[in-house]
Image (cartoon, rainbow, N blue to C red):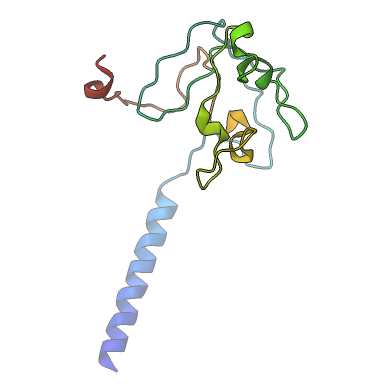
Length: 149
């Protein structure tokens, strides 16, 4: 019985201490001081890099960055604008990078005739590069032993 009371007191103190800590530290988000149900300010338009050479990757297995603007691209169940340049049949003529063979593999590594459904929506992994300052501070350094840079 005595052990149960001590355990209850410890749990109570831990709960009170944790609650005080949560209240003491204000939460800040990238939305700024706006509540979730309020409109935040419209973000400034970003300047996309001009179409150019592929952008160097910072880590092994990083999906390539998109070196051009894609604002007007449509990628949905019926069409994928990216494929008009990056498909195996069009990449040479467009002067674009060919999509990887891995995009034609199922989850179980079976080779498919068409792009895998899990790799069809390009912007899940690939993002355009813009000249914007980081949203949060970052001191990431790429591994130089592998890249040789």
